[in-house]
Length: 260
Figure 1 (cartoon, rainbow, N blue to C red):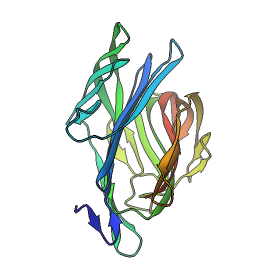
Figure 2: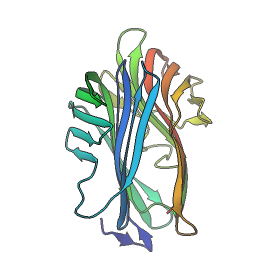
Figure 3: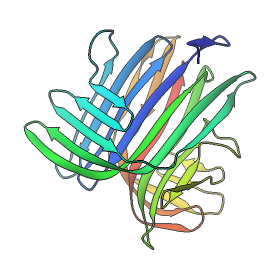
Figure 4: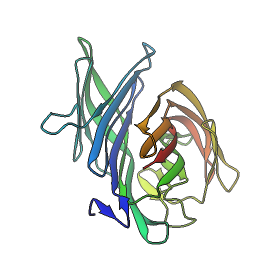
């Protein structure tokens, strides 16, 4: 994709979230045209402590976040993350954005994640499950969406994961919505969000969300680029479409309003 097309800057990002009984974390790299940033966050569920940072991309300066293939690295004075993700079956789609432009995304949810996390002078093993979002496109100048990605287990023991959204890449069919059951993705119908508290499916199933660590940020240049988001970590309960009842679920909810 060229950096600019149809009078729009190309936007691209990669976001990885990973969850186990002790930690929830994310690491991401974002670029809007020639401008970029990285961010990371680590929520320690036992200590009830959230550490996070957003850093503008600076040429020739080594970034704190490195996402390369299946490897996730975060290097800072406060936190060091070194994880390797397993393989799985991804979903991919391209969607219209206005009359001429388009967006693309690839989602892979419910894969294993193994490695270490250092907080201060203490290094802990991480043994959990990850979600991986790679996206790019020429999005509408103003784009607002609600999004959730998570992992869990059904009452009958099957492994579950999901990627659910409204406002972006969300046509009735061939969307980025997906539910993974034992690693196999299927596309549910359109969903509706009740703020950041719940997600309702067309068959009446509903996921509810309990926030554990609130993440919020507002930034930008007036009239040019603006971003306002909430993206808390937390736990899920309820049912996914098709009567898939959760016995446990962890992940993220997000509300994002962007002028780009």
